[in-house]
Length: 231
Image 1 (tube, rainbow, N blue to C red):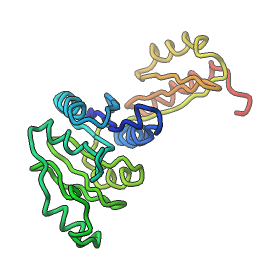
Image 2 (image 1 turned 135 degrees about the vertical axis):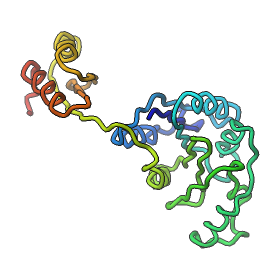
Image 3 (image 1 turned 180 degrees about the vertical axis):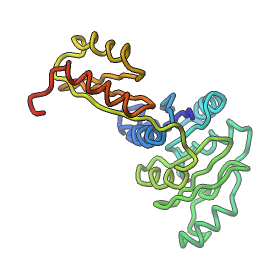
C-alpha cells in the first residue's frame, strides 16, 4: 500500500509550527508496512488543497490530509477536499447526532459549519475534540491538533496495511562519506535496502523482508564500522 500525506497550514509553511503530524503518521504507517511515497505541505487555500488531493488520490492508494479542520475562518480543508471531488459541503445528521449525544453539545452551541463534511463522505469521530474528520474516495481528512489527529487515526489505523518488513540499525562513529564503500557492500551482498542518516554519528537503517537476512547484513556492517565510544 502506497500513500501520501498532505499537511495543511500557513503556519507550517512559515515555520511557526513544526510538522510533527507528518513525522508521527509516517512512523505509524511504516510500522504497518505501508509506504509513504509523498509528504507535502500546502497553504490554507481551497484551490491548492484541491489540486494536490486530486493529483495524489489518482497516484496512490490513500491520501491522509491533516490540518485546517474546524469552523474557523481559515479552516478550509473540508472545502478543498470537497472541491477535489466536485462535491458541496453539507450538514451531516451523523455528525450532529455524534456531537449532541456522545459530545453532549446542543445544536445551538455549535458554531456554523461544525457539522459540515463533503457530500457522500463517511464521518470520522474525534475522540479528543469537536471537529469531525471524514473519508471520501480514499482521502482521509484528520484534524491538525496532534492529540486529535492521533486519536482519530487510531479509529482508522486498521484500514492501512502492507507487508511488514524487518529493520536493524547500525550506528557508526565516522563520516558518512567514509562509509560509502561499506554501505555499497551491504547492498551488494544482501537483499536489503540501506539508508544512512548523518548527525553526531551516522545511523544506518537496514530493511528487508527476511529477518535473518537483515540481521546478517547489520552484523556484517557492525563488524566493519567504527562504533561510538559509548557503545
